[in-house]
Image (cartoon, rainbow, N blue to C red; front, side):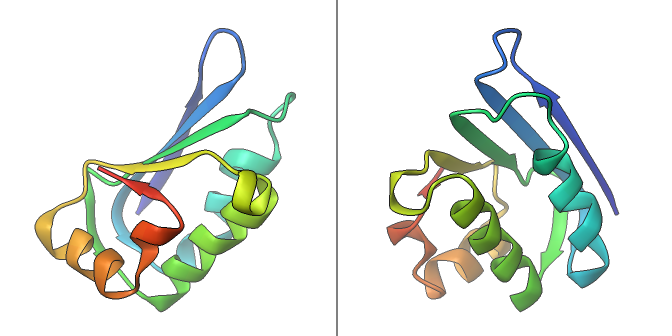
Length: 101
């Protein structure tokens, strides 16, 4: 499991990349990817292209990101989901909370 992030040149968007398993062991690295930035971005992207597994704690971490980013006013995209990961997100009704691509 590896979590990395990149920030756009203007600092308004952060993209968080998750490789491997997205579970409770990722908690601190995931939070650090967006909480330790010098500027609070207005847009967030969570790239799950390399994510092989996601569990309920990962869903909880996405909800914590949503709260941190402004709740209902947040702008968060979850992108590059495998069919299995997307199925979990849709079963959990996360398409109502996040822009899932």
